[in-house]
Structure formats: structure tokens, C-alpha cells
Amino acid sequence: MNFTAFAVNNVKRNVKSYMGYFFSILISSSLLFSFNMFINHPDLDTSLFDDYLILTMKVTTIIIYVFLSLFVFYSASVFLKSRNKEFGILYTLGISKRQVKKMIFIENLVMNILASVIGILIGIIFAKIVLTVISSLIGVKPLKFYIPVKSIGVIILYFTLLSILTSNFIYFVVREDKVIKLLKGTQVPKSEPKSSPILAILCIILLVYAYFRAATVTESELVNRIVPVTFMVIVGTYLLFSQLSVFVIKKIKENKVLYKKKTNMLCIANLHYKIKDNTRMFFLVTITSAVAFTAIGSVYSYWMNILDQVEAAYPQAIFYATENGNLNRDNVYKDVNYNESDYRKRVDLLESLLEKDKISYEKVEGEIKTIVTESTGNTVKIIKESDYIKLSKEKRLETIDLHSNEVISLSKSNVSKLSINNKNNNVITMDNKSMKVKYADKSVMPAYYNAYVVKDDFYNNISLDCIEDKFIAIDTKDYMKTLGVIKSFEDVYKDEVGYKRLTKASMVDYGRIAYSVLLFLSIFIGLIFFITSSSFLYNKLYVDCQDDKRKYRNLNKIGLTYKEIRKAVTVEIATLFLLPYIVAVIHSAFALLALKNSLNVDVAKSSFLVMGSFFAVLLIYFLIVRQGYLNEIKEHLVD
Image (cartoon, rainbow, N blue to C red; front, side):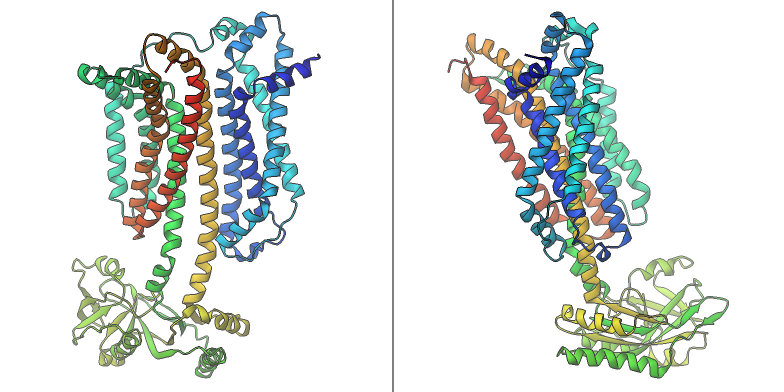
């Protein structure tokens, strides 16, 4: 038997020890293949996507490749721990450094290539289903099945290079001068985990303060708070597992009544060591899970709220108006880009296209004036009360009574404009006249305008320099039917300089594509993070299982029953699975709360659905792993 056969046989004869590492690569390659197959599909029309979406897809690809590289390296380091004694024995028998390096390289090359090839085959088998699901998710025409030769080559090359780098990493760690340590393997007695009360208190302060900052953030503060709050959460999470959890368990152990009750001593003592030993794994799983929950939850929240957002921002199906130039405090600049006949021609075309498609509609025509307010120097748009009443009736909304010294704000964002130079947010000065501001609950104008309603006589007799524009507001019962009308109109009038077209169907269609692509990317990254995190747990549990088998066998000999052992094991594994999940859910809950408070997005339904789905999968995975773990430990035990 030559050395290559020895290395290959070593893999074949130790399938269980290699299984977790192998499946980590297999799942990673399968997911990566599916992602590459979609984004490189020849029939995928990327012209539907804005530049920022294409850039996001590229950045997502880089994140996936980098994260998978780190994941494989971490898996290799955990896998290495289970082979400490094996390498120690080989060095004792006289194996050379060159032979160790060759053996490690062959093993990694075999596992990486075999796992990546099987992962690609799995991806090809489920390719049609994956393409159909993704196409449906982002709302494009179902993509046809194809064999992505380029993606296959890229993935095999990627995992081959990764195997070379991993081999060098393992060889660097496993050196001949560590023979004694390797022979001892994981049997070196562990010192009792220690924690610092000061760092435990710092952990609580960091997390509580970070949560408070997240819960009280406003839209204007959101960007400035993201980085410091994220940093505090990351540091606080690490301290939570390395210091606070150890400190709390130590205090529980001091409660002798609780500690000595039934099998509590065994469970608590085991957790005391396991949480400290698995600090890095807990930290990585928590952060990656929190990122996954937050990313998917936030994008899905926007995706679910897109109709409400569009409905609030665009009251009518089609709002078409002239846009006649710019105005500032010192001068009036008019750039007349339309004439009355041109405007009428465009409006007539819109109506004829609606009638051609047999779409019943209601319309309101009116005027908008742009003026400068004396109190703030800001430009504002005003409409007549009579136009406001017609628009309100068309939307079946109640109107607000208006007196000569009052105006109605159709947008609550106008509060900030008023408060710049005016302490009283309920007063605005127009044409040297102070007017009391009332606020409408629902706007009858698109949010783009932030308009005020004034009395007709004030509108007609205003002495300020102003710009006057005309508009038509068209509404239908099913506004999505107007999408074809809008596209037909765009084919005739591609150049819209001097005009503003705000259409609800176009906004929904654009938002659906944009948010669907972002949702797909966030779900994919979330799956990568979640699956790799689960692999972290499996690899770590397998390493610990080899030691736990001996420990529980000895405890069984002195009288501990299998039922008591099963209870202790269940508590330990449940802690490994659920503790990072619970912390990640809390982190994500405050992140999504910040989103809700700052951007007024309903996140409750999406949060429950996303986190609940992950929990269901995690629970199934926990039950499977627990049963396999118990089956391993149960050997040679007496009931």
C-alpha cells in the first residue's frame, strides 16, 4: 500500500469523524452552485434591475465566498481537534513532516473535490425547482434549465484552492514539536472557567445601552447610530458568552440547594465548562443568526408593506402634471417646457389609452402654485380649496373646514419645514400673512409635493412671485391594470422634461422587483449563515461526543441511569442550540424595532414569520442531532 492509498483509506475508515466536515463542504458547494446558476443564467434580464441591485448581487457574491472560506477554515480547526491523538501517534511512529503535509493535502483534496462535485450534482438535480422558486420570488419569467459549465468550473476550482489553503493551515498547526500535547489529545485536565465581575457588568451595560439606543432611534439619527450600536452589540455578545454566562452559572453553583437537587449538579457543571469552551462558536452562531434574521426580516417587512407605502405616497393611480422650473427666495427662474396644447395632447392620449383598454376612471384637473414662505425661506406648493374638495370627494375622504386665516398641510413632513425658523409649528407665513396650519390625516396629493391647501381667493390673488403648474389626477379601482397604459404612453413620450408623471402601478412594479431581488439575496445569505452555523454546532458536538462517551460510561458504572444521562444530554444540547438562537432573536428584535420607529415600517408579522420559520427548522435539526448523540452515548451503557 502506497502513501496515497494510506491517506484515502484513512478517510474511508474514519467516515464518522470526517462526516461533519464533509457535509459542511457539500452543503456549501450546493448552495453556492444554486446561487451562481441563477445570477449567471443566460435568460436573466439584468436590465430590469437598477445599478444598485446589480452591485448588491456582486457584493453578496463576495460576502458568500469570503464567509464560506472562513467557515471551512473554522470547521477544519474544529475537525483538527478530534484528530489530535491520531497525529500524535503518527509522529511517534516516525512519520516525516513532508509525509504529514502530503497526507493532509490528499485528505483535504479528496474531501473538497468529492463534496463539491456531489454538491453540484445535487444542485443540478434540483435546478429546475430552484430556478422556478427564485423566478417566482423575484417576479420574472420562469428561467429554463441549463448546465452552467462556467459555474461548475468556478466552484470546483474554488474548493480545490480552499483545500490547498486549508491543508497548509492544518499543517502549520500540527507540528512535530507538539507530539506530547497531541498524544494527550483532549484529555488534558481543564481548569475551572473563570470570569471577571467587571467585564460581566460591562456586558450588561453595553447591551442595555445598545438596546436603548436602538429602541429610541429616529429617522434622522438612524445612520449615525448604526455603527456604534452594532459595535456595542458585537462586543457585548462576546462578553455575554465569555464572562456573563460563566459568572451567572458560578453564582447558581453557589446555591447548594438548587445545585445538589437531582441531576442539576451534572447539568450545571457540564454547562459551566461547555459555555466557556464554546464561547467563539456561540459568538459566531449568534452574530451570523442575528444578521440573517435582521436582513431577511427587514427586507421582508418592506416587501410586505410596499402596497401600503405606495398607497400612502400615491393616492391616485396616475398623477400627471407640468413641472415648470425652479423658484428661490431671491428670484424666479422659469424654464417653460410646455404649452397648453402640448399638455392637452398628452392628457388626451392618457385618457384615450385608458378608454382603449376599457378601464373606467375618475379624474380631477387643477393647478399648483410654487411660492416662497417668508417665515422659513423654503419653497412650498399650494392648491386651491376647491381642488382639494374635488380630490377628497374622488377618494371618498372627509374634508377639513378651512377659514381665511388657515391652511391645510397635506404632509406631516411639513412640520420640520415650519420649525426651522418658527418655534410654533402650527403657524406659517405666506404673502405677509400668518396662517394657522391644520394637518390632514390622509393626503389627496402625491407625497412628492408636500402641498398646502389655501382658500381660493388667497390662491387667486397672491402677490408673491410664483410658478404655476397644471395637473390631472386619474384614479381607477384596479390601478395595476394601468401598467400597460403607462408603458404605451412612455413609448410615445419618452422625453418627459417639463412634466412629472407619478403612477402607482409603476411604483408597485418597480418596488416589487427591487424588494424581491433584495429579499432573494437576504434569504440566500441567511440560509448560508444558518446552515453553516448549524454545521458549527454539529462539528463541535461530534468532537465533544468522543469525550462525553467515556464520561457518561464511567458515571453509568457508578449508578447514573440512562434516563438521567438523557436528561443531562438534552439540557446540554438544547443550550448549545437555543442559547445563540435566543440571543440572536433579542438582537434582531431590537434591530427591527429601530427600523419600525425610524422608518415607520410594520415589522411584527414578518419578524414572527422569519424567526418562527428558523426556529421550526432549528427544532427539527436539534431533535435529529440529539437522537444521534444519544445513540452514540448509549452504547455500552446499562439502563
